[in-house]
Picture (cartoon, rainbow, N blue to C red):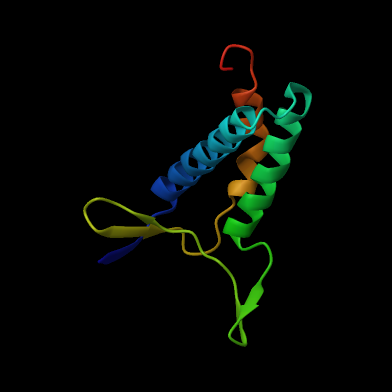
Length: 106
């Protein structure tokens, strides 16, 4: 496996990744018959919480070791692409929510 630091591809891919996660959250809430008036708020809140966890905004402990998460992407060529530090998917959540709930995209 080849480990590659590539901020350009990573930035694009992390945005597409969190957009997919948020679309899945929205679809799950709709499928669960969540009231329409709270689907957007829940999608944003859950999406932000998940994104912060992915981004390593706070550490956690397991087996007595303090840990933080780091996001990487594995290509079909066996390349593991990273940004050289933490991701920042949470920065995209509000903009993605705007797109997801735009009348033309719903």
